[in-house]
Length: 250
Ligand SMILES: Cc1cc2nc3c(=O)[nH]c(=O)nc-3n(C[C@H](O)[C@H](O)[C@H](O)COP(=O)(O)OP(=O)(O)OC[C@H]3O[C@@H](n4cnc5c(N)ncnc54)[C@H](O)[C@@H]3O)c2cc1C
Image (cartoon, rainbow, N blue to C red; front, side, top):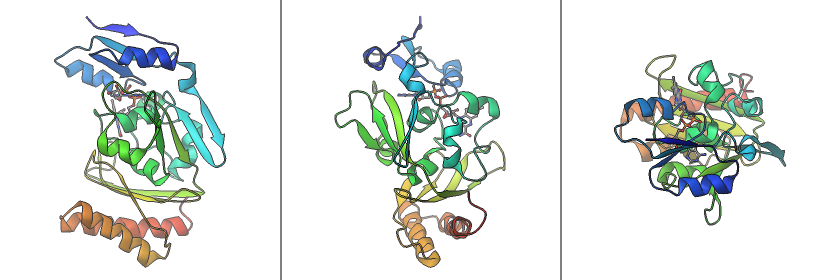
């Protein structure tokens, strides 16, 4: 039988998730469908909703820190998704519950917030981890170890951000290829190649269009040997650069 645990502090939550067979629940939008099909039942679901600090948001020196229960559609995150907003992600009902932290640490879903968040230089804090803060890129690459609790995410607030991507269908379809770039201290560019793949930061310190596109193309070629995908990412990069430095970004 699965028990539901509602710790009220990070310390209690962390000690609960150290037990074998426990599963963390934030917004539950990834967990619920998984529970419907999972063959093995968790011994306990450790809900984070009563950890008060998990709902915190904080602005400081151009950076935003959000707790592990902050939902994708929270207004503090609006500047992170540019002029088009976050309407491309899931449905309104899912966006109200799905957390940004849950998105990037989940092994159950496509982690589609990761590309803009890597462009914003995001770092993840996990409870009890030596050093505590890890770059989001590293977390995406290596995954959060079992039993580890992500407590908050910190990112740079962009002056402007543009994210262009390709999916099989226009709505409710997984992102296959994406290029995001942001302007402002600590901000940069990131690309993703393949649904659910780890987003990768690209050094685009030279903002000239040709050099920006060349840097993205080189990274795409390092990540894929599919000429059509590389060409599509290169075309997305040209559009991102145009919109970032033109009128259609935020
Ligand atoms: C209809 C529908 C549409 C969706 N559309 C999209 C989409 O467009 N793009 C997309 O990327 N995803 C999508 N998803 C997947 C999911 O909604 C997102 O990944 C969401 O952001 C997960 O956040 P959550 O808070 O609901 O995570 P939960 O479901 O609570 O958890 C997801 C996983 O992450 C772990 N986890 C969560 N928080 C923590 C934490 N703080 N520390 C350690 N582990 C943690 C959980 O144990 C679990 O394994 C969709 C889901 C549904 C049901």
